Image (cartoon, rainbow, N blue to C red; front, side, top):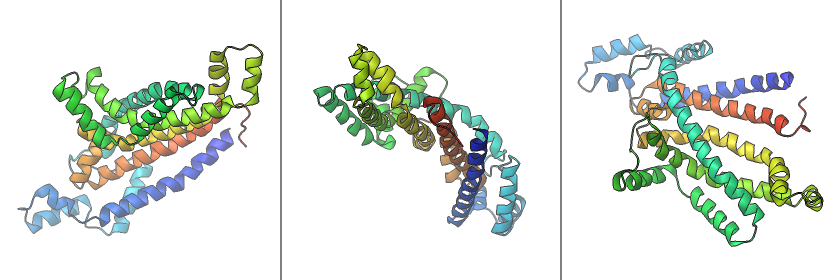
Length: 306
């Protein structure tokens, strides 16, 4: 296990280097001048040149990239051009809000999807199965940029049940979590149904029923348990994608997380903050993939790492 983890960690290094290089290149190829945006259109050329030199933006791109890479290795993502604060500190300040939203969204997705998928598998071919499949198809078709404003209009503006923006109470969390979690639950429900249905066809489930095991135990303790590997894979990948979806959701509901920080940084041409946020998303994806590989051995003792 230790050798496997060490090998996987080594393999993540080229991935992160590639992501950092790609992000750095794309950001600097986009038209626009962050210094001009900071000072305004009325700034004199001397002021612009002075600030550009102070921020190190007048150096060749290779030197800027070398400084960026060296800083990343030491945990220093640079200084925000917009707030003049360390990017690492700004991201760490916003991270709890994003993690809170991500965990809540995944709980919403799992609480909806797993029971729905199991019931649809057990009742295959019935009206319940067709209804669950239809709901999953509708859920997959609902993008967050459409669902979020719809929920805000209905439950905040019309009904007044939940606040439309901010963070601090459970009520503030409900609409953003549902906006992120509902589309995820659709895909997870379909995967749960397919995995459980496949296990229900296995001979060991038939043998368990023949031994007098109750239907609930045969489904939950045998079929569902052995179908967890593909389900956990989807959950892990979805948790990584939640950070991407949070960019839109946090903007809609003014949720003070990393996603909203990324949007604000892009608008302000804040290179260091944009690079830091995207690196965080990349690290999250890589970490979730590593965690999934470890969980495989926990869920199925037959899996051995070499």
